[in-house]
Image 1 (cartoon, rainbow, N blue to C red):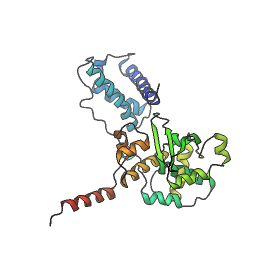
Image 2 (cartoon, rainbow, N blue to C red):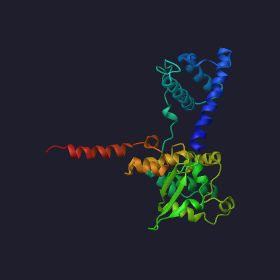
Image 3 (cartoon, rainbow, N blue to C red):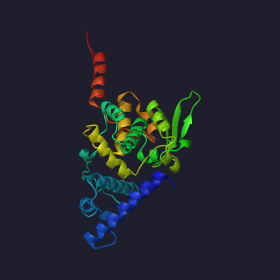
Length: 281
């Protein structure tokens, strides 16, 4: 079973567990026919997930989208006639969306001396991700076998993503190369067979809060923000979406567009270009 199939299967398993619980509590039954799933049922399930299981809005919406996809599949196969999601609105909470760093903030993070080795190592891992686009789990599993050098002497990361098994192909910039050299003789890294000193995700995110405070960056730094930062800066400085998709290890560009946010600076530059073309006289 591919990783992407496994991730999807786990999500549906979790949804089924919540639906079973909700059905037992609300309807005193073990199961319901598909045509009993109504607007009311969906809204009640949403409330059940967010209260009893403390799912945040975005997590609950993600699971409801799985149910919606199955309902659409059932309609296509003529198992049911009506779509209970037709008038049900599901909105992602934008305030919980990770905010990427600007180039100035990333430069500050790269150059600011850290007060101790613990935070310096965390900063280095974050910056490596922000300059390669690697997700946390991929940088954690990065090994020497994933580093290749082409006929022109350019070093690349060739690594299948842990989440999807889709291959990421990433030419290394000077700073990530320097970081790999910095830790190539690190005892902890060598003992683990890893290239970088990656801690647990929880520790990483906790220490990043300290680093944000030291650098006066008024944003919530997490491991995922590094990947978003790379994608946004890549688009802002001219990398085409289809090329970025290959770097990030996405199977299609729709996934990539989720990461790439367009800054006001980029929008302004593109508008100026359009203005030059459309200018009269």
